[in-house]
Image 1 (tube, one colour):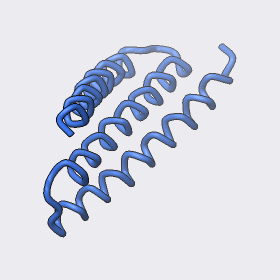
Image 2: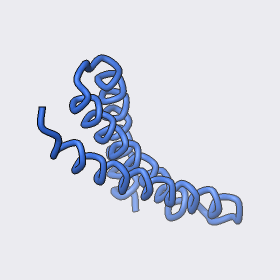
Image 3: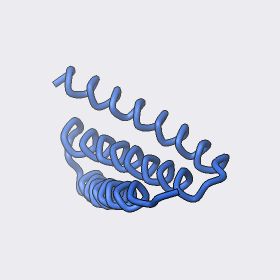
Length: 97
């Protein structure tokens, strides 16, 4: 169980770093395609971060009602961000510039 906690913390840290990196890059880009690609990558990283937080909340701590509800909301939000990021990445990847 300790290795799962460590692995989830590593996923959380990497996705947090990626989310901040792509957020900064998104604001500095000039072209529409590059801005969209960076925003999509930021959404993917943010989705992975929220999913890892929710898994930590749901499975690694004792379950209270509030913890389960917060974990489930974070899981749904993370899945939506992941889905939207993958969809937008595909859309912006097809744009010709």
